[in-house]
Length: 193
Image (tube, rainbow, N blue to C red; front, side, top):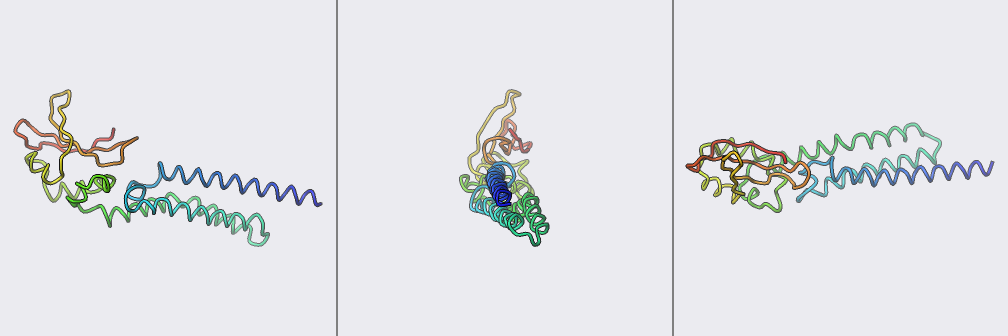
């Protein structure tokens, strides 16, 4: 009987160790793929780390109660599973809230402050184009408004100014402004490299 209890305790400890490893993996995957740009980088980056850490820690505690406490075992397992499952929707909601509070409205100073707000630029584009009617502006007016971009000439001969609007790496986003030979913006779009 004593050996059975010891082996059950060992199995529980192994399961908790596996959960801790999964916890670390989920936090890593979250930081790389799941949390939106607004809560992964910049001044709100702590949110993208805090939410999954707290939720997974709570899931771990609930799982411990389920394993070592016979009363309310099913409830603790359900709570633990729910906390893990709801991480992604809660991160999405948090990202949406931060975007709407901090980045939705175009702000020339934030746009130009590239190092702190590059992840927020992508959310400002709609407001920028609505307020400033970029198509039809001269390139020097755009550069006054947005700062210096990267001037390019494409293989097809079109002239472009590009601005980084997302974090560099996989699925890097750029805001592209095409202009004619007179320096007038003719087209805008977002490109994902």
